[in-house]
Length: 95
Image 1 (cartoon, rainbow, N blue to C red):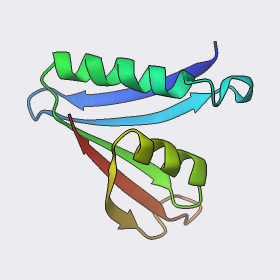
Image 2: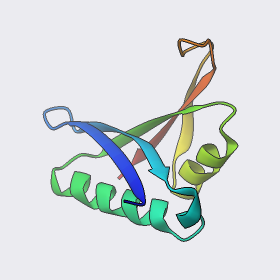
Image 3: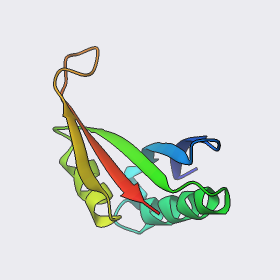
Image 4: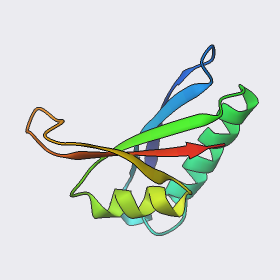
C-alpha cells in the first residue's frame, strides 16, 4: 500500500469532506496523491456531490500546497481546533 484517501459524503446534501490523504514518503512527488484525489473526485461527482471540504493543520505546508494545487480555496480558519490546540484551515472546492 502506498497511500490512503478518506472520503465522507452526505448524498442528501450534496456535500463531502476529503481527508486525510496520506502517501508513503517514497512515493511522494510521483503523483500518487493527485491520482487518489482524482479518483475520489470522480467517485463523488458520480454521486452528485458538488461541495468538497478539507481540513488541514495550519502548519502543514505540504498539505496546504497540495489542496491549493487541486483547486481548493481557503474557506475558514479555526483557532486551536485540535486536541493539541493546533490551528486548522478549512478549504473548499466545488466540483
